Length: 60
Image (cartoon, rainbow, N blue to C red; front, top):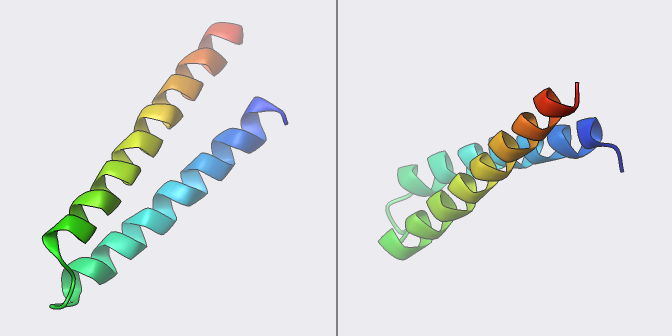
């Protein structure tokens, strides 16, 4: 898989987590643990995206 397609996949996953987080926060039955887990996954993806962007800029 080339770096551009995997980067776009990570960005799409990050956006999906943004939606999931917004829905969880709007739903009163969502637990704090569930919201925290979504935030951790989103942050991990953000770190991966930034790392990949750094590699792409160095390689270019």
